[in-house]
Image 1: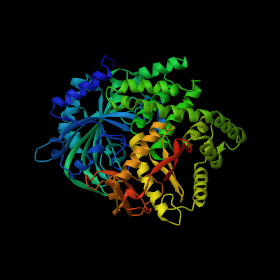
Image 2 (image 1 turned 135 degrees about the vertical axis):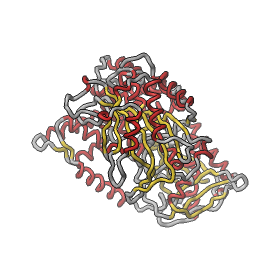
Image 3 (image 1 turned 180 degrees about the vertical axis):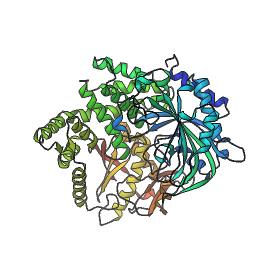
Image 4 (image 1 turned 60 degrees about the vertical axis):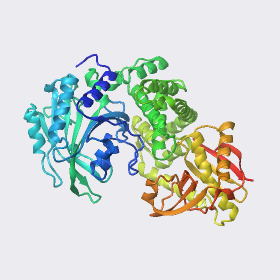
Length: 606
């Protein structure tokens, strides 16, 4: 199929359709989920979990049970598959919900099926004859979804085009180890024989080809999965659907993949201009396009490149894109132009990209520059490993760790390059080498309380409280991406390491000093509370250290007693003064680099 509908028009049609059907649009939530058990937002339903379980009232919050959204999503399990026709890291999920269906106040399976067919056929113009359906065949004590089977047949889908699958394919959720979930039905679209494998068994979920593309997943949320793995029926039932925007566009525009649609074509065209090469569905073009888009959206959420969690994922995206740029012989600054194009394309729908453009571009450029400097030397070191191991065809973990530690190569990048050369990476020995290094690093530090030495004096106590004021001030002046990366305190000064991609300006340093001295002058109260760790995190207390916290933690809040305005709130095991007026005058003596993406401040109390 090939028609003239643009992605903008299709986006608008989706919005208008569900508004017309009495649904309320809900803005996309952040890529950083409130649920701390998962790394990133990977589905539209995550922001609705308390309402899907019945813990919170959907009516009190939204005034209706019927909602829809276009949600920013990020999924990492298939990152190595990016470059083919169907996989992405960042993507947008179109979805609609009917939350708390009971007493005929919402719609359930039939309503969801009717809406999906109405939209795809009557609004999008897709041929019903090309739809193939999957349903849940039963398993783990949950019966086969005969109701869904009957409904699809009722709405004109022949039984021979309805396939049954188990827990792995047609039972959705939960997002984490526990939570709302249920059997699902997927609408697959037959793209035609030219995409097929030719096998008689070819159909939805075919492992050999991409002829049948999963288009829309209708989740019939009826259960809650408990921590022990058992399932219990929810007090209410919910509809939760998800349709990949990129896949829908590629089908509607008659393209082999979304990389040829108008979602990506301007980015690909820019890459052609920079490279002087023509795009011919090359994986390097696709990886750069996908990873640039993903990096822009992650950076817009305040994430900066690092070696842990979200920051590590961002670093991996940028460095993998840089490595592909090396293959295409691109100039060192190419990612900057790519990022600008992504921001131009998506800022009409996500205005934050435009307001944060300067910071996004700075972070992307700095990370590209850092990696470009070490990439050349690292590639030479990698080639030595290959040349010296031609018989074993194995890269030892210690050597892979050397690339990680000294040249900034994410282990996945080393593994990917090894595979290209017909080698295997010894993951087990890499893990052992990394753990050995971490143990050695820990052994060299005789510090506790986040940088406070064993002997705690009045002056050290004052400096420790000052680090909390400094942390809060830096986040206010530089942005919420700032995270404490370490500290060291003596009788004479404090040293504070924090995440930030560039040198602070004199104006920024002066502003931080002014804020802290103003808070000292205001004589703020420093309150200590004992809380359960989960309760502390839910209350908004910051916690950026890598150590494992106990079940009960201390939360220190610096606040104005008259207005109850909170200036700083952190989980901390260190000693503190009672009021900020005890501190004296704060002065920053030096601001410098302390490593990749980390700055260091040395300051005193006068």
